[in-house]
Image 1 (tube, rainbow, N blue to C red):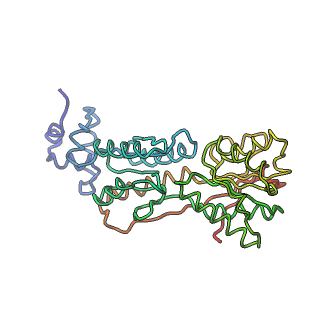
Image 2 (cartoon, rainbow, N blue to C red):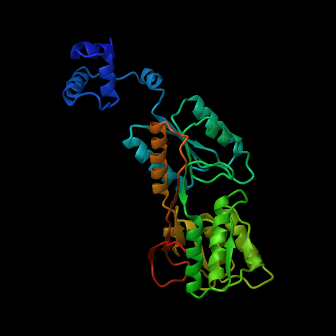
Image 3 (tube, rainbow, N blue to C red):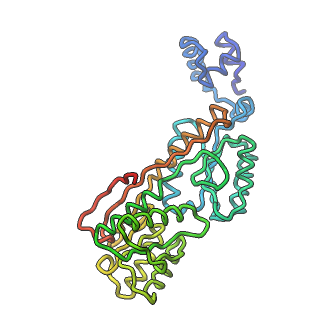
Length: 347
């Protein structure tokens, strides 16, 4: 028959509450008593009933992480950061993949709540999406941290500083002598795309360059989106840009493929810069210059904040917003004659 807390308490000559205090690392139990109880636990190979313990503490020791596409190396790195912190804290992680679909995001959140996870880290859909399910979390004082803002909802947030990263990438191209710099945006629903567009425009304005609206083209996040826009640039009635800043690395790689197929040399004819530094960019024949997001750190810091919210049990406090610094990872596609990373400085 399996040992119980009552059995441990009887052997140690203490109350069940004292044994529970040791199991939950309570500071009220003396070191001598704690050592005696731990020795008994080890001797009898006692294993707590996790279900009963969860009910008693009203916690399961599990958190949920919802991302848009776990096959994207950026999200995988974020997940690794979350798991790193949770492992240190004795927590488990359940990952949900929304595939950038609203109904899947809602379904994952509802399922994880029914499973009584202690809190959520969410990379949500944004512009144009129904966000009542996130607003409900706020009303319920359910612990959660966002990895992207949702207009109208004040919540804890951890993300990279997109605008500053885009500013530096664009300014870097300008400093290399590029004058006709285009920007391929992300999907319509992505606020990050708007922030990167803002950083791009601010850099042009600082250097007295006027953006050509025909060089700012709606793209997406996939390789095929970049390939399609690359074809559009080549058929543009106006002069083709001499540099292209892209919403992410996948778009940048798609653009380069379209250029190369049509005899346009990268970077001699057109420089290309991506965003994220997530995946194969460094291993291309012509290495991709890109703005590197601190994905692992985003995961770590979001998990740290969620653990804080869970343990403080005080979700009435003002939400904290953390914007992490990016780095410009210089490789061959921008046309620079040097490689390396450059930290972004606020402008």
